[in-house]
Image (cartoon, rainbow, N blue to C red; front, top):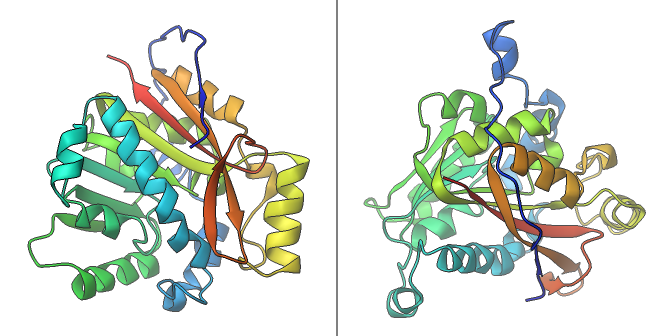
Length: 280
């Protein structure tokens, strides 16, 4: 795996407090774009079609993003490497919040590994899909729950609860990104990890993630992405810095559509993954 270790020192700042003085309801909805919800819910019926469905690439992405999470948790001491080798449920006892979980494509595999998973999404249709798949795929004693809610609502009663928070292919669909990141970090325990996969805002990403993926090869449904919403690694790190986190790793990820496989690369000009840790 090719990764860029962020070595410049991070000067910790006190997390900014975002005021609720105007309208609490307006604030609660600040990160939610109704157009995004409406766009994605229309694919609910085919969400778990791993071979030919519109989320095919997200299913295959688990082969890189779950090991990325595992490695990050080992590197920060939340997991022990010998335990990973010894047990198929090596994430036992790890509390994970999957923000923007959709139909549970990543939440359910994490639960199989023993993690205590909470998946949240503002789309009732997609949460219904996730719950249905839990019944079909997991045992009754699995510690997993799916909630129709937003991070704004969830973090108000779940502060510093989670060992890890995952935002995979989510932040590029969010409005008010800095507030969104800040609220996610509020739900994270001190020294906990926050993991992102997303798309950079470059000419290469416009050509690759939109023109090629949506309009030439139809790899994802048209209208899925808005180039102006893509966060650069520098912007994302800035939001994390201001929320009291230190970025540890930034890695490029490349999708090979003919094989439906993902690979780690040095280039972060299109897709990238990022791991940061909340400072004490």
